[in-house]
Length: 141
Image (cartoon, rainbow, N blue to C red; front, side, top):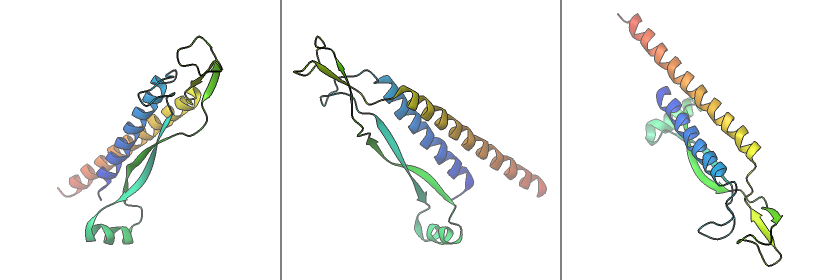
């Protein structure tokens, strides 16, 4: 797998991560979803993706670091909901408590900063690879 593809897969993974974070932040007060109940925080799971075919197996045997990243799945955070006593709220249970999403805004902001920095690192790696390729072509002239 070429270095451009590895950097591009990293950028795509972080873009997807930012979308999940934005969804979590947008639903921080959602007490009722289509499936019923409060919104559950979502998180993304990444996995390495080696190049396929015999060539990919040969390359991975020679260089175990040459793999890209892919989203293996989106999971729901099973931490408990936050409950508040609001007996007049339309989503209150029979005891008057409302379940609010298990989204922590500070945690999501830290995740957003981390995703942005990771995206920037992949952009820098992509640019460095491009510059090295251009210099290599200039050497051949």
